[in-house]
Length: 125
View 1 (cartoon, helix red, strand yellow):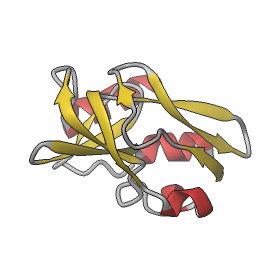
View 2: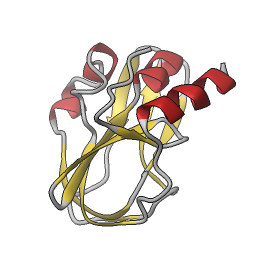
View 3: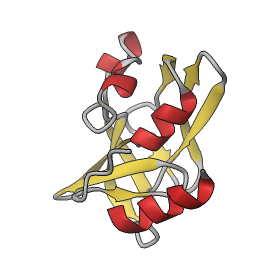
View 4: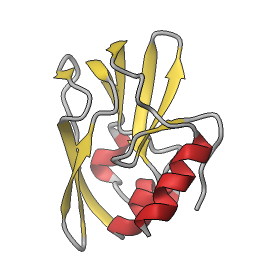
């Protein structure tokens, strides 16, 4: 399992990359591996308010549809439109295929560092 040290992680298997006042959010390698081949993504709209721990997007694999939970609260400032036509990019490069970007961020205290996330995933396997 690939777990970049510079990112933070949620227990619902999203990664967060902070950059200034915004953060990009994506699915972890653990999540994309568990889901299998992704065939569709449904992303929030730019301007949508998102709340930590609440579903804000979903991904569809050949196995099932799964919710994506926002790891922080804030407002969606951008979406990765490439994923609308190529959801498989998440399977190919989960840490480059971000889903959406959040600004006006709050509620980020419960995120895990890479070591804590790896330990959490080991318990789930």
